[in-house]
Every structure is written in C-alpha cells, then in structure tokens.
Length: 258
Image (cartoon, rainbow, N blue to C red; front, side):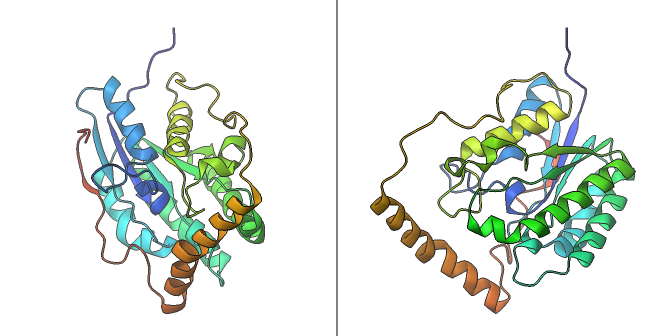
C-alpha cells in the first residue's frame, strides 16, 4: 500500500503563475496551484507550514533579489521555483543572463531545503507561443540541466496535452483557469510521491463544440482591449503588474485555508 511522503513545509517562489492568477477567489484574491497543493499536503500532515513569496510580473532577476534568500532562510522541506518565463516573453531577452540568474537561484536554494522542485511551464497553443517557443525551450533545457546537477525534481507541464488546451486558459491568454491550476497542483503532488488523486490530469477536457466565428472575433477584440493593450503599455513604460505588491503569504506559518 502506497503511503504519503512526510513533507512538513512548503515555500513557493516565482511570479504570477505561482501567485495563482487567474484562479480568483470570492474575496478578490488569487488561490492557484500552490495553495491547492498546500491544502492537500496539510490534510495529510498535521502542523504543516506554508509560505508563498511569488508576486505577479516578476522577472528572474527580481525573483533572485527579492525572494530567493528569504526562501532559503526558511529551510523548508519543499521549495518550488518557477521563473524566467516572463523574461522570455519580453521583446528583448538576454537568454544567457536568464540562464545565469536561474542557475544562481537554484544554487542558493538547493542546499537549504529538503527537496527543490522546478518546472517546465505550460504553454497555451497559439501564434504568440510559437513566436517565443525557442526561448521557452532554451529555458526548459536549462531547468533540466540544473535539476540533474542539483538533485531537483522537474514537473513537466510543457509536455502535458491538457495544459496546452485553450479552454484551460483564462481570457487574458496568459494565466490558467481554476481547473488548469488544479491540474498543476496534481502534477506537483504526484511528482513529490503522493498517491494520485487524478491519474488523468494530463488529458484534455472532453470535446465541446468550438465557438462560432463571430464569437471568436468578439473574444479577440475583448482580449486586445482588456489585456493586450495594457500589457503592451506596461512593457513600453517599464512598469509591472506586480509593482508595489507584497507576497500573499510572506511567512512560513501553519497552513490555514481561506
């Protein structure tokens, strides 16, 4: 009979993906895969502690400068690190620098936790992802190399058919829906050695009728107006959606569901 591993604490490091956008709670805050994972781990481990240092919009340099030392000092059983994807989506990106900074993050975290978890981030199917795919795959190659060198686990979300399905992405086309986050939590849960709750998390949702041409064009226009143009504006002015925002769970404390 398979038993649950004994992990007594979790610290999540990263950007909007780990903060939990767009898994919106009724109070206006975000839940996301890391919160879902923490709730599961807490349910099987009394006294389980959890911190989430991730903040939306952060580039890998900001993650290294603002989150890594704090996370390392917590000496958690498990630390998850997902970063660098925001860099790859910028018009200009120094992939050598991204690789160096990700390497620095792993080297500073791995000795100070029981298990470091890295990810090959999911990618929504579409022309935008195709444009940036070579950068993304270069980032994931670095993730694989660092994991092998430092004994980290890698969760391959990039290769999961379900997480490429457009129906698991929010209207902003950058963040997963609640079901997408649930599937990520399941993937990490299984990678850590817990018994599967959803063995088929990688399978896409059941087929549905595609939206009509007018509905697709209306969705495209709404996306451009509400999400694409503001995103471009922030890039042009050097602003970030996370400017001035603190982490939602900055301390490693006993988990309490909201």
